[in-house]
Image (cartoon, rainbow, N blue to C red; front, side, top):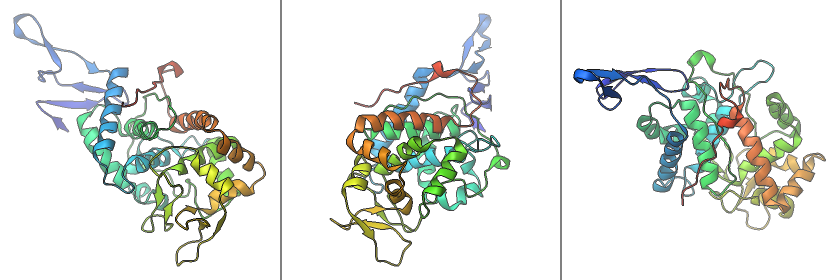
Length: 318
């Protein structure tokens, strides 16, 4: 792949080596001879620039769904990471294998081309960042720019080829129950409290009939990250929706909101329900627990060469 005057060669997750004929990335020695600068190693401020570019794109492109790409960008980072299997060490955000079939065509990933396409101009602007780092960084940006908790993030993911694609069935199926949730999240190493905290991502976004088959938003503020999802589960009354689509719940008050069977299982299960009630009463607690769990989710299976001190807390837009 050629960029400008010089070819670039990928150096794993850390950066790119630029050819010495690139005037922007070489210095001049005695006699005017170009002197190589070596590989570009991004620093914290370089990743902040990526964050800022994603945030700017989210603000400028307000014609998607309920007015923001942020929920679907969060879903991309979540689904790229949620394939991890702790027993085999496979899957997870490392690799960005959702770029390829068959993984990009898995039912749970329907519609995520919108997020991948949205981020492509960012990748072109910052060619040194891997897709897998970009997708997770963008998911962090999406949460924070929707008013959610700060999620520490660190780089170190490399992109893999199609041979690393994970099998279908590793992501949650909204039509199932709490046993399914424990099986899916337990495979990644999460406990009951973390399962309920991560479910809070349903505070934002909506379902589409041409993707999951389900339809509608979970909350009245689908582009603002709050604890409203839990409050609605606890305080609202729900009934089965009468329609030709898959089984889903509808709120009694307005008939405009939805919950999936997996959502309702959180208040039916005796171990899940106390956490739902706690988060419904205490948004700060939810934010703290979601931030921790999401940080872990985005790091699952990544062979970091840096320590936890390399994590970055990105500055939000004003």
